[in-house]
Image (cartoon, rainbow, N blue to C red; front, side):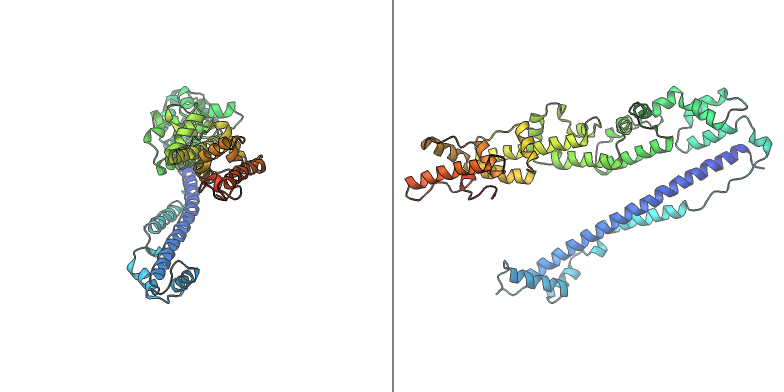
Amino acid sequence: MPTQAERNAAIAAEGARQRNLAAAQAQVATTKEALSAAQSAAKTKTADVIFNKALAGLPSSYDKSTDVAKGMAAMSARYGLQGAALNAYTGENIGYNISEQTKAEQAALDAATGLVGQYGTPIDIPTVTAAASTSKNSAYDLLLAQFKLYGLEALITPLKDLITDDTSEGELTIMLRETPAYQKRFAANKTRIAGGLRALNEAEYLGMEDKYQTIMRNYGLPASYYAKGDLGRQEGFEKLIGFDVSATELEDRIMTAQSRVLNANPEVTTALKQFYPDITNGDILAYTLDPTQGLATIKKKVLAAEIGGAALGAKMVSGAALETSAARAEELASYGVTKDLAQKGYSAIGGGLERGRQLSSIYQQPDYNQAVAEEEIFKLAGQTQAGEKRKKIIGLEKATFGGQTGVTSGALSQNRAGSY
């Protein structure tokens, strides 16, 4: 006859099986999406190579820069009318069906499907006699078996001498959650409760830690961000869990820091530090991962830094006296100026700013300065008036030099606002 402890262990194992099965099924859906994306990317890459080979394989009589030649190449690539198309399939190891990324995603899908099969069979839970079910250690054994699944049995063992014959599992769970060791291990729950959120149970809490760690590893973050201490505690995650940061939001924060700041032109980082001194020690990644800093606020600051960085970059290239500030960058962002628009716009402004100032001085006109150029180039509130100032000083120069102007590039050479 099985003991109550054996029954409790079976119950705990069945619970773990169901959780693992649900996680594996969710993983299947995720890996299917990744496989589909990998296949699409590989197909696109293959198509690009075939097209370029087909274009190169056209007779030399074709001007390959024309739309006609490109159309012929596209037809060749699609219908195999040129030998180059066949060569692309047989001579290049890039076919989507043999793509390394596709194979990796297929292997991940196979592994996930295998897990579903592994956890698909329910565990047989034995019955016990009434005498065994009332054992003093039944509640303790059940809770111990559950926490062994997480490697946290050390939280349970100190309670063994405190239970009585009639201690239920529920009562023992309450006693456990009041211990200092438990509260330290699941410290973020205190923050959640204080913020009006519900406390996470142990499985949910550990599940969030696993998701955070996977994302950070995938993005190559230093191990110090997810290091484990006593009982597997990951202090770096406590703020994230306490402020209810989802795995999706965490990934968004990391991508914002890495792709838009850390891996961007150094002028962006320079502008970010200049505009927002509260981002101390240059630890931009730590700042973006701090859940007390709202994601919308972070993105607003990053966009302002991208605009400011565009101005700094144009200043270095053109030598023009371009200036930037957080307030102005945020104002431009409110008008819909993006990083790309800022780079194009400030390149145009830098190319004509100094000449504009010179002409304004020569013809005693209101100063054609950076703010005026920005109003026209970025289509701000003073766009019309700024355009009139530009046209006037150009017109005066043309009148002086018989219809000729020394302006050949930059903002002053634009025929209309925003034509960069």
